[in-house]
Length: 181
Image (cartoon, rainbow, N blue to C red):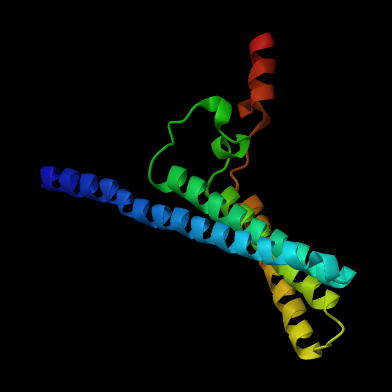
């Protein structure tokens, strides 16, 4: 029976590799987003000479929105792969600093913060396009943004509450102080 249990647990452990194609698919989605960004940038660059200030700001906000979405995809790819599949064996000098420090709770917070930033840009774009006021659309944008903000707040608070409390003697500073005595 113990051998069956070990085999089953080994099978479960290696099943994490089933997530790898998802992350590969996100890399392709990032490439599609880059293509869309290039097309949008090209159209924006061609029309900038005759555009109003509002149109220029809206064009730039659209590009920023795509950039934030790309950042969100990268966070999911790197953190998800490292947290759920395998550590990335890359040179330390090229590794972003946040990659070694982010756990699942941090991943949730970064994802929610990115979503809040993306929704904030959508709200700002809605306010900038007030030449054709659509109060219903604007109310929905603000309402959804407030829901995202509330969700981020709940995630942060729940992560803070669920963090194990560490006695000062167990912290680094406490251990150094203990060794110095």
